[in-house]
Length: 195
Image 1 (cartoon, helix red, strand yellow):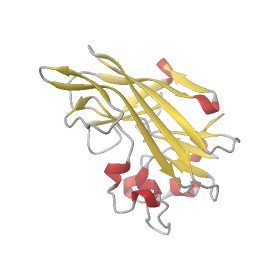
Image 2 (cartoon, rainbow, N blue to C red):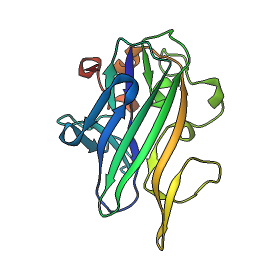
Image 3 (spheres, helix red, strand yellow):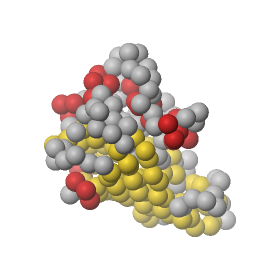
Image 4 (cartoon, helix red, strand yellow):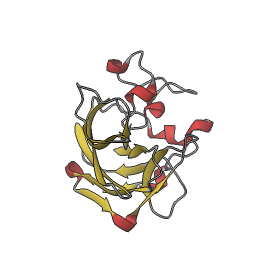
């Protein structure tokens, strides 16, 4: 099974930031420090994404495992200059085993080219931006019904930690090879980290 994780941070502040570590306990997987880099593979340069060091700016990391998982928890630790570490936890629930990959990139789960939509029915009629897991450094709308923890400053609310859940159906790994322009920054199957 291929697992496409997308550690992303919406960062409006001028402070430098980088992904400090990724831990997935179900896979005994940990990457940290110099093994990681942070880039901006999207047109919106406020979105920072963690990736393997030494590669062009791509959208996330691709893992390959022989384990048949029903869920996994990705713990991302971001370092924000002069403000410290912030934590993002994404628990992904895998709803079937019809295909060979799951992806935290919601757009990749949608219907495009010859592919039918595999976005979970719980997210019907929601825009992908509302589904896509992401950490934020500057919190402009604190919510009462969230698992967000933030600290108040005179300039605004700084998000310290966020926990999110994501329901995913499996998708075809061949989607990574699409010619669609919005998917040109995806990891390729030969870049998968074998666990």
